Structures are given as C-alpha cells and as structure tokens.
Image 1 (cartoon, rainbow, N blue to C red):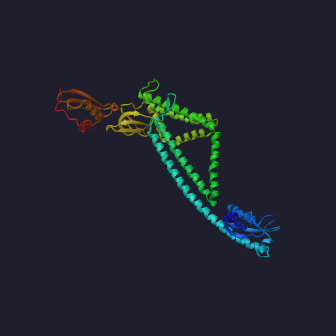
Image 2 (image 1 turned 60 degrees about the vertical axis):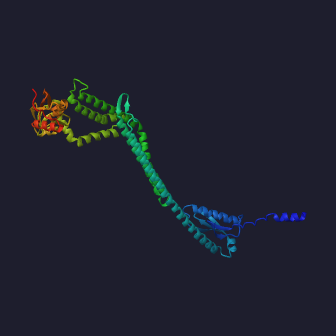
Image 3 (image 1 turned 120 degrees about the vertical axis):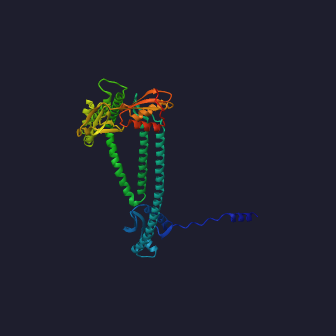
Length: 479
C-alpha cells in the first residue's frame, strides 16, 4: 500500500515543461528574416540574432537610414543601416547556409534584409504621416475652439465693463480728474479687446508652429518662422529696455502736459460761461484764447521740452514735434489762414454781438465770433457760419442795430399764459436776436401779447406757432 501511494503521488506531480526553442532568427516587427546557426566569437547565435533585431529597430527610429548596405571587415562582412551596424557575417555563416562564397552569401542576405527594411520604413512613414495628419486636425479643432472661446469671453468682459458704470472709477491725481469714468471704462474695454486679439494671435502662432513640426518636410519652416518672429521681438524688447528711463520721463511729461491742458480748458471755459471774471480777459474772447494756448502748449512740449527731457535733440519725440509742426503747417493751411484772418476781427471786436452785419454776402445778426468763423442768425432764423477767410475776398458791412418788427395778438384767456409766452418767444426768435414776448393786457375774454422780433414775416410765424400749439385766439381785445 505504501509503495502504491508513492507511485500515485509520483504520477500526480506535473511534468516539466519542454524548453522553449532558442530564438536564432533576425526579425523586423516579429517577422523572421534570417536564421543564424553559428556563433561569432563569444556571442551565441541567439545573442547575435537578438542584438541584430534590436539594432534594426534602433535604425528604423533614426532619420536618414533608408537602406541596408554591406562593408568588408577583417573577419568578414558587416551590414549597416545608415551608420548603425546591424549584423556581422563570416565564412562560418556562409558554410552553415550551404554556400562556399561569403561575398555571394552576404549579397543575398543584404538584399533580403534591405527589401524588408525598406518596406518597414515605408510602413512607418505612412503610419507617422497618418498620425501627424490626425494630430493636425485635432489640434486645429482645439485652436478653433480656443479662438472662439477667447473671442466670446473678451466680448462679454468688454460689454460688462462698458455697462458697469460704478465699478471703474475716474482717474484722479489729488483733486484733479484726469480721466472721467466713461473714458476709463472705454480705455479698459479697449485694452481687453486688444489683449483678446493678441491672445488669439498667440494661439494661431502656437498652432502653426505645432503644425509645421508634425511633418519632416516643414520642420525647417517652423524653425525659420520662430527665428523670424523671436529675433525681431527680442531686439525690440532690448531697445525698449534700454529706452525705459526715457520712456518713463516722457510719460511723466505727457501727464504734466495733459494736466496743464485740462486746467487751461476748465479755466477758460469758466471765464466764457461767466463763472470766473478777470479784468484782463473778456468772456467772449476766452474760448478762442484757450484753444490757442492749448495748441501752443502741445507744440512747445514736443519741440522744446522733449529734447530737454530725453537729453537728445535728434530723438524720436523732438522729431515727432517737428513732424507735427510741419503737418499742421501743410494740412491745416486753410484753417490757419482763417484763424490768422480772424484774429483782427476777434481782438478788434469788429462785429459786436447783436448787431446786424453783412459778411461774405450773407446778412444776419451776430451771435458769436469764434476763432474760425462768424456765427450769424439770418432773418429767417437760420444759423449761418461765415469763415474769417471769406472776409479777405469779399467786403463786409455793419448795418447797425437790429431792425425789429412788433406784432400784437390776442389769445384765449383760458389758455396757459406761461406756455403762450414760450410759444410766442420761440416764434419770434432767440434771445440773442433780441426777441421779446410781453403780456400787455389780460381780461375775461382774452389776453393781449406784444411780440417783438427781427423776422419780416413775424405775424405769419406767430399764427403758425399758435395753430401748431393748439392755442385759440381771443374773441375780443381786453380793455
């Protein structure tokens, strides 16, 4: 029984697995191409086959190794894929294959390996191009979505900034408001839009570089594109860094000039409106004098202050001032001629406000004399602007005080007399033309108004105005 149990236990033990056959074949992607039967020095056939297979795999990953060639060595022949040795063959390999001529055997092996190697290179090339094209399409989709998302976010942020009137405050220096809330909102919204466009350009540039790097034939173009973009950008940044102190001082100068311009504008505007009164500046001359002073400040800052700040008389700012001066002299010649022609009229007060004059063939009452023209109100109530330059070619006449017409009208006593007065005054003309509407008498049956204006058809104007306003006439004149 003991012997029987030992026999059964021996039979139940698993039998050892058969040894795996030795791998002596040179392969390309699990495809056996050549069997090696003899060793080379201390390398067994299995080791030779494994090293040759690994060498061929490395050569397939390298660019330029497109074929397999043979070169003679001292002990036989070596097969090369580009610069990578993939297999060494000797006389023993030829005899093991049944050939007595090593050269003939090596040529046969070279042709066999070269055919398979070229086919594998083509397959890998097709696979790489398909994969690159897939990446190109996928990356293009991502870039398109990024561009669309940036545009949407930028537009929404810009709209939110423009609509939010309280979040962005005005820019102030102490108690002086340099830029209003509206200007700051517009500047911030513009900055967001410019930043959005720049980010979109960066996305397009990165995608283009990635797309060019996917294909071997376009990789050089990607390097050239990078060099053509980054080198000028680096040079510009270097110059900006060198000019940063001058730019900071120029920015400070621009801020000071902006403050001076704003102070001048507010000061002369207050004189023109009558809020500020000074003996040396009449109110009617404040606006043109203020414009002249502001223009002079800008030109002086560009022509004289810029070289002092930058320390370079031939710098960009001084040249900018000279160019601005020449441009103003050439492009604004008619306006400058009109201004020069109007200076004697303005400061000599040739045409007082409120008088009837004839200027440039147009007759009307002087409403205002500005730096560029003379503003008239003709007998029909229209506003006429006559440039000062016209006075050099056509004679002008002062016709004296306004010739006013007077008309009396009786309206219903039930009407709103304050509204009646406003309607009649509007029909007679503006206050600048000396129009008046006075309530002369008021009774139970009507209210009598005396209307004074410069229009020849004053009665017709009053009738049309009362009819349009729905105001009824009185039945009889009040006592």
